[in-house]
Length: 309
Image 1 (cartoon, rainbow, N blue to C red):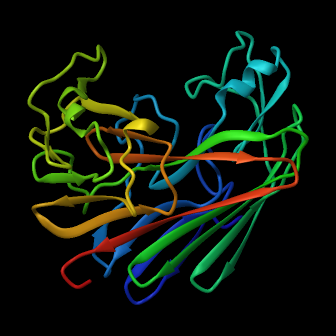
Image 2 (image 1 turned 90 degrees about the vertical axis):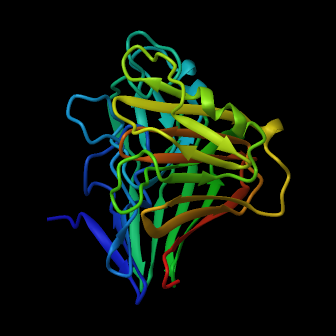
């Protein structure tokens, strides 16, 4: 029976990393380097499922998982023809056509992905398959050191066309399983439109705007109401991202010493904020542009902290 996950651990951190084919496969998120759970000092938990409630629409995301975004590629395939979804596989275009839609169901031939563990590091290699002139070998490394976890990605263009897309990390996180509501703070120094967060909360179902839920104070978002049957969503374009020497967001809560931050070792091309009752997601996009025969590497580091770190 195939192992479902690998646990990386040291004296401070324990990270459970899902192996491709070892769980609910998503048609949206990269099958490699999915971090299902992170535990700090044996007691503080950080990762959540995308949805906890039965019957909710979901893309089966969990914890720290990435997505390669090139949705318009599907427009080049007629119904029944194949198009690539990097990180996932070759998809069969559905009858109605159109760009890739995360809510549609596609037949998928998954890319072959290998994984090897080296101590506190696991390496993934996703092998290329040429389709519509597109092919990429994708290497991902997940490593823990002290209270930090890093994901380094190298995408090599083995196809005939330029790779021109985005990648982002969808962080499904909360602190110690505390439901989203009062006490949470999200600090984002590089977001020039953070004041717009007060308009981002909406009711589930009819998406009625909700007031008095989210509030910005300086560069910090405060959660003033419990997130019962509601969600929030806000997008910051590239020209509204401050130029800073360091791009990092931090999530904290007044009832726990635990916190998590993500440092992006690149200049973001977009920021999307999303969340529901059980998780808060800060999604930082990186622009990928790779000529045939070339490669591009980028990295992210998460720090998990409490009163002992």
